[in-house]
Image (cartoon, rainbow, N blue to C red):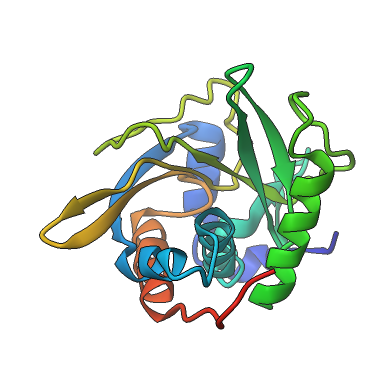
Length: 219
């Protein structure tokens, strides 16, 4: 795990950070409807699996936006993780419970998919809450609710004042005017990023979805 400190003296958001971390701890949630028509077609053609592709595309955007990779030490000093990895839920229908797994982010899609498959084969059937050992702190949470769609979702973190990483929740896809829409909710800490940065994340994720062109065949 590599991390580096924020250049506090030259950081444009230092007063915003202090205000929303110490004076008025503040988080917010934003839900956006993403067009995943192209991704769904690739899934139907057998070229890709939906869940790992969505995880990878999300991680791809998160890892190029510094404000989404912030953490704070015990002295309230902001640091940036060099890389974030997706931590995600896997549902067990027989028990109606879920487990948390994680896959190391790799900028190469094929390598990430292979790692995701290996993690699932080793730990996916284990009903424990967190069966996979050694989850690093530089993981961002991602949950799926494929049983229902939504237009708004809020994640309550009553003791999350110092958790600066984003968290995401995706719902059930729905069709509208011939397009496939996916609701994706993002939970953000105001000390780390403002609405501008959250909006930029969703805009860039939509661009990644539009341009995603997985190769023929899959592992």
